[in-house]
Amino acid sequence: MTAQSLSDQIDGLIIDASGKYATQLIIVQTKLYNDLSTILRFVDLDDNGYIKQNAGNRAILKEAQNQFDKSIQSSIYQSALEQHLQIIPAIDDLNNSYFESISSAFKPNRVFIKQLQTSALETVNSLVLQDGLAAQVKIPLSNILNQNINTGGSFSGMLEQVKTFIKGNEEVQGKLLSYSRNIVSDTLFQYARAYQNSVTNDLGLVWFRYIGGIIDKSRDFCRDRNGGYFIQGEIESWADLDWVGKNNLTTKSSIFILLGGYSCRHQLIPVSEVIVPKEDINRAKELGFIN
Image (cartoon, rainbow, N blue to C red; front, side, top):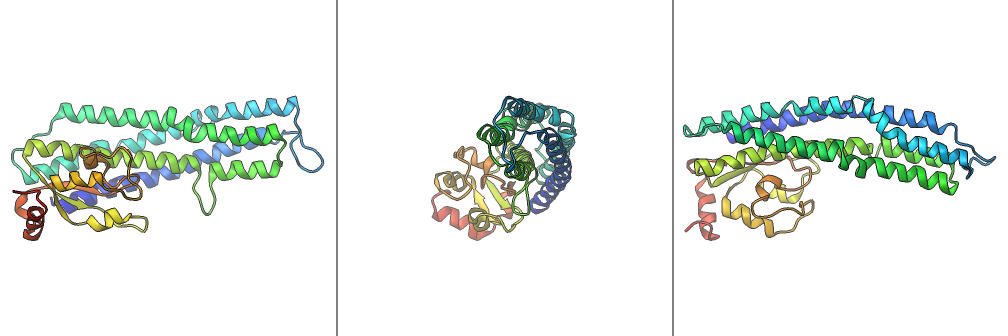
């Protein structure tokens, strides 16, 4: 298996699963919006369609705010997430096949793989099911409801805000879809990179190929490096650069995992020096990364 083949297969695996996940999240968003609309239709309005400020409407506000958890828990949200994460063993198999093809010394570290899987699942649970979900979706939605009902806003305006936030429109995705899908996709790509990076020290690999699909939203940082071969020291030096989309947690060590930053689909595939083009080796020497 080549580095390009590994990258293509992992990219295809994650993107395909992400597409299926998105379809299920749209169902969840629709359920949430319908559940809230059922509650909000009882809001008391004046003759001009503005929300009256009274105890009854404040009770409806509280009921609507409490509905978020009920709607999420009674939806397919968690099962959709669990189904999406089932591709992790397939990512492991692809990485194993690649390293077995380039080095007879490679032996999968089952303990490390298990630890890496546990870490990835903990990240997703925190960001997509627990604190992150509340901070990014539940609380902002509650604020929209609170601001409109407690200030006597336009009912039609509030409903449009709620609909756009939850379901999105032609210009933006629903908040749950955009947030959850991006977090899970990033976590899976970072998982694949973490596994790949962990093997480099064991096999004594210091050269990498920067590979991934170029899309309309690809940042210049990735476009400039895509397809190229780079030595470890050169990659570490990128952490001192600034670029659009850079993860603020990027360091000389974490760049191998975070790479181009948020929503980056590229990978740094470790490769044997024997396949590195002579001009890339010479460039590394000129830059002082090879004595």
